[in-house]
Length: 577
Image 1: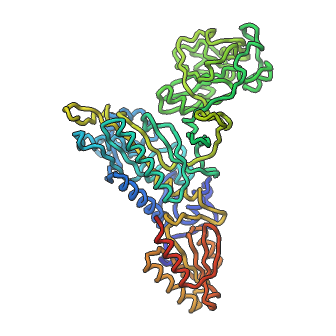
Image 2: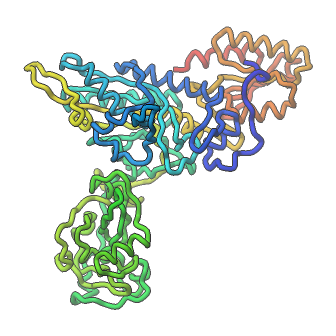
Image 3: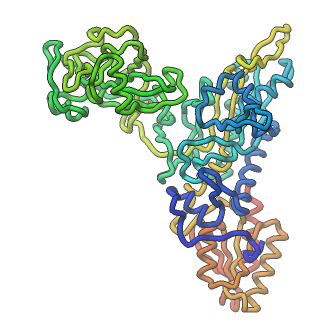
């Protein structure tokens, strides 16, 4: 490809709405252009990157025994009603009507469709196991699209689904997919960590995410890990806690109500009563699927919202607003404001207590009266009809590993893939069954395996860049090398550059020649910004028979003959997995 013909326009400045490295770099280097909120045009350079990632995914999925198909992007409401997700999925599901008033949706995922496909085609145990996958655009109407391709509304994804007759078969395929994923991300030049995670809207009993570890602002989730091998996303991580004082007996000799004026925060309450936060029972009001839920937790700890939502089987969660708290208090005959809320008297509302609450004694708790708390209290004193215990605590760095007891470490991660054990979550309600050898019907045992194709490209930028631009891993770079003749008016420079261009092209190397009538500095800046893995500069040294050979990743520069440069590049490309 000639740079003079390549459809690319680099920008002098980063877009004003770009917050993270990948969004800034991909937009400025001419890979993507925003169409509307969370929706992007993939320009020719980007499309080449995405197709290379797709091809790596295809090769490894095929090698793992999966078969590719393609399912519709527009999906009928009826299938989502069969699975029970039409109302549960939330506003991220883009709903629409066709000209005949049939209700449809834009597919954010394809569990319902693939289950229907299997229901029509897999009738006998003899046809399984089987794994079917597709690579296709998806649409989720994110409330706040951000970070460019990392959290857009439209995105490209590989999703695979396995069908087995037993949990043992599912376990085998789950491990098979985990191995395939490791190979895929290694080939894409990404160092990933497989971590335990929450299944979210997909559902299922067990799930893991593949996270690209990064120190950039794009890291969406905290990943807790230990040298022993334990690792988990923050919404799934568990830990052991150091021993602390959880019995307030030495502070309070009796149970009573005390005045605690202007103690709206835990720190203010601790200072006023001269106590540690570990003997305060904190009560928080959340709205889960539009209904209030009370969360109880030791005051030195934080609620992990996904864990709380899962504990009550919800699909959507947020902290209650001041107005909602006031309304809730009024309904129960109280007038307390946040900071003085407690579970006592809050009938008809689900109450979930974190496991840290079990051992608390003689603690301090709000009693739904502003400027007052009960001290020396115990759960038996609160008159609660029903309370559910669950792990709803956010793990923190320094907590102890649940497997070996050492201190946990924390880092930021970008999710690029996930795998789920769905079991019969979709096959059972959708009556997707097979006949066993005795002629008895059973629902399929399913697994689900996703890779974000466009997210993987963005994550690669987050992991490989410097202040000058992108440093693409060669396996997914749009082109392998750029040849830069410094002066296109120089006959010798252009002759050598053109010969190298033709030799490399004929040898299967993906090469660009920058034949633009621009200053050398402009060409060099564009080459670094776009991120070609190798650059060959044909300048004045060609009079000595030498060209400049530069490796983008390391910045190493060497003077070699044109023949040696071509030989090196051909050998490098041959060895790309």
